[in-house]
Amino acid sequence: MRSLVRSLLLFALLATLEVHAQLHASDSRSAFTKAIATSRIFGFMEIFRNSGLPEQMLHGDVTLVIPVDTSFYALAPTTYQRLLAPASRELAVAYIQAHVIKGTFTLNQLASGKAQTLGGQPVVLKPAAAGQPTTLGGRKVLLANQAGATGVFHLIDGFLVLP
Image 1 (cartoon, rainbow, N blue to C red):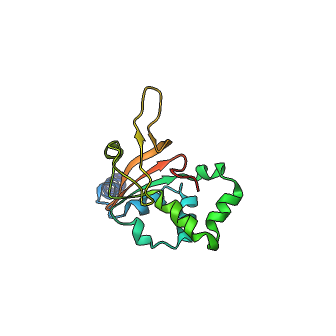
Image 2 (cartoon, helix red, strand yellow):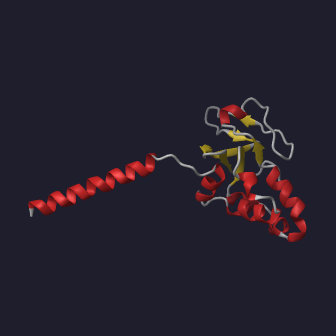
Image 3 (cartoon, rainbow, N blue to C red):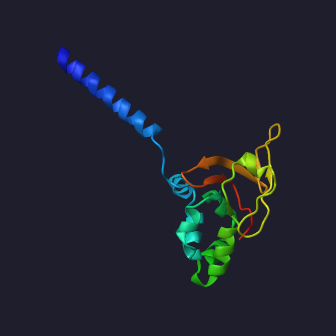
């Protein structure tokens, strides 16, 4: 009986060490790949697919400011459908470019006010004040400074530019 308990304890210790090693291993995923794993950006992904832009564009040295899925509830259904229509690729491209910044920027770095999206819009950060959330382009930041091996992403509760 004692050897069974020792074996179980040893197994538990080895399993714990394995989990610890996996948690602290270097993560080679891009910020875009990590953002997909949050399962909160389905709408953004659908529009990206419709845009026809190369996926590599989102895996490089970029900052992604991604509206979470609940942001799309505020849109009229026809607006969302238009973003997904094959005939509206230019609109989808403009939407995606309005949420991507060339270079890697944390929220602190965005406070300088010098960053702009690929669509040419300035990105304005308003740091949190007493009782107020941090906002990016007037939208509440829900998740910030999520770095990948390349790039960084921030999730917001709306759109930097309405589609």
